[in-house]
Amino acid sequence: MVFGFSKASRKRLQSISTLAPRNFVDSLDFVSNSSQTIRFHSSQIHLDSGEIAPGEVVCAPNEPLELFPGMRSADSIKLPDTVHIALGRVDPHVHFRESATPTRSEFEEWGPTGTDYESLIESIDKANRSYSVRSGCLAALKGGVCIVGAMGNTPWGPVGPYRHQRAQDHYNEKSLLPIVVWPRMEPDAAPISRHEGKDFGSTFGGSGLTGDARKKMYSLWKGEAISYHNDQARPTETLEAFKERVRPDLRLLHHEYFDGSTVLACQKETMDLAESVGVSSLLARHIPTGPALQQILDRASSSSFALPAEIGLDYVYWCRERLLEQDSEIALINYRRPAHPSYEDQQSLIHLTKETLNKGYSIFFGTDHAPHAKAAKAFSNGLPGSPGTRNIEHSLQYYFELHARYGYSWNEIDRLAAINPAKHMSQFASFPYEIGTMETGAMANLAIFDDSVQYSVDESLLAQQLEDPEYHSALSGEAGLRGKSLFTVVNGRVYDVEAEIKALN
Ligand SMILES: [Zn+2]
Image (cartoon, rainbow, N blue to C red; front, side):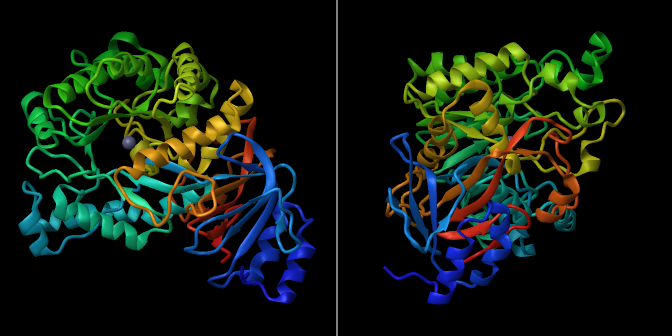
């Protein structure tokens, strides 16, 4: 086995092996040229068996993982005992917002209709200025996430095979990690076989498709896999009318209007539609409550198609009661769809997720990372702006909530955050090596983190580190957060993510 370090650098590596993680950054600067091998020793490697054991991992760019349980060699970087090496996280649900820019002839051939070329380019430029694939990737790396699935609700979205490929190519070019772009379903757009189509039809503020149009769109994807956002407005009352009638605490306006019954209605309608058309699989995105998960499990027991379940990661942290304890100004940016659950519905979600996982069901987390500009989040005419929060960079802190407060084992977290979503995504995309397994020969995707340190959000620091001038966080000011990401390894490339994010090999 060939290691990239010279004898002298090995010596220097040994000399830093007893330092605290904070010091790795500077000490490792000297190895930050390409095609080098980095070897980590940890007393806490998360094995697929569920066991946490000492050993070493070897990472080199584009090379598969090498795993040596029990080994402790002299030329490895010895991590402190509180540092874990877990599988890199896989997040199937992010909005990175950037759009490929079509030429005029592409626009004329592939649409969209209903707008002119100049207006489209203007909205693409606006979207691309406010957030980038690169910022999204930096945020993912910060959260220990190595692979993401990106949504296509962008100005020139991945509609139909041609535009989907263009969007995928654009993301590949800009990305620091594998991104799977989900094809966007539209009533006249050809499906992409053996991929997973994303239905924005029902989404409040999405395509606004109803009845026959949505059914027509599903028919095109007969026999294929589909996913959908399970949020929609109340059919009989607007948010404005609800506000007039109920006059809730403004922090809860959004959360009481989209109260969980809106999710149940959307899920039922969509499952009926999928059944009537005959799809192979229907993934509910960002499930926010125990009853919503239960509804899917009940249906799965007799359905002719698979019903995988994506749990919205931040719902395990936020509930309405907690929002009322939050600083009012931050609480007013802390809305998303589906809305945050009641405490009771949150507790049942947390309990049922664990139970469902341990029955072997295809259940996993998604963050719905939604990096809206600050201005877009502002209330206008007394009503909230765009719903969505930046989440992915704080994945680890959310996991810690489940681990510390609700007794989820690290293996349960690994299955929900890495193994199960990897299995799901592997059906629709290929990767250089097997993903979702901590084995020699698998893709070297790792999340290396310290679970012993307290964490608090520093917005201006994160704005810098994530190259995201609009950065703001719903977790600002939250006390009691824990965990710190140290290194994230993507296909053998080791990123130091503790402060500024940089590749070490
Ligand atoms: Zn979403």
